[in-house]
Image (cartoon, rainbow, N blue to C red; front, side, top):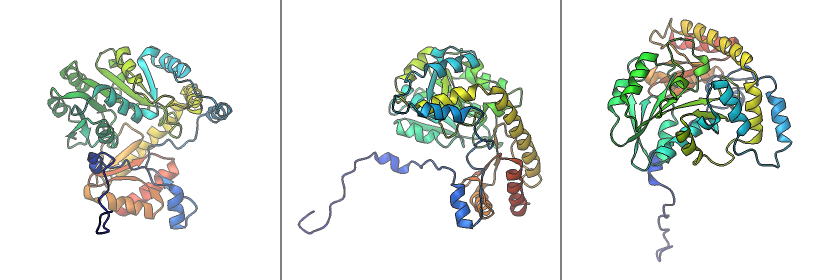
Length: 367
């Protein structure tokens, strides 16, 4: 306090640059919306979850692991790394696990960038990219999407400078569902300098049906390619937060140094191992999602003709300035979708009944 009794401005204790950084916005709680509307249940189609519940054996594995919750988990995540290596045909030394693939994206920025170094990515893409770049002190270089809402790989390659340390390619892209085919991705990989790490984010790989969309793991023999995957989507572990990265051993070893110790807890490790044993059921569930994705896409194109084809478990409605209005109309009818102001709305594929409820709103508001 000064002699005049006025309080001095507080001392700044946090980084000023974070003031301009947007918060990551989670999907709205369906329970909250149901209470607000006075209805028994709201439908959540905002968070790219799979609607069919945990895979067989997962709940039991979590319960068994919880009995040892007074002990630290295996920090080396040895059993899970071995299972992932066997499934995907790589070595355990190439794998790093973390609290979802988004955490591994953050660890990759920390492992590659010093303050002022640059990370190139398409925009709009996964909304966490600018957050993880900024919190590591690096500089974002967002490259606008093409008119078809997909990556402009030529512009992304041109945006690489001597300050670029990492480039992120999201395939299929979240939230637009757009995708890159093999020739264009390979041309891009050939164009990026060898000392720039290309991170292929494949969180939705299991929903891809176009045979021309390449599996990023086919490129990890290149020293400067890393691939991100997650068990949150197709494998039904969104609430357990398990992601993994595959890269050359030297890159993986560097990333392990910056991973938060014990970042995958014991129940999550057990759940992941149980889920990986259910590959056939995952394939069956993905086929259900894909069939509904195609049905919803065809229905929506009757009144959203420029709806892009999606290879994820969601569809993108490029509504521009109408995104917020449409999302509010959906909520008023008990359906939660994910608006991106000024750009569009992402709708996650749910059960047939849930999708029909969404389509009823879309017809009423957009037809």
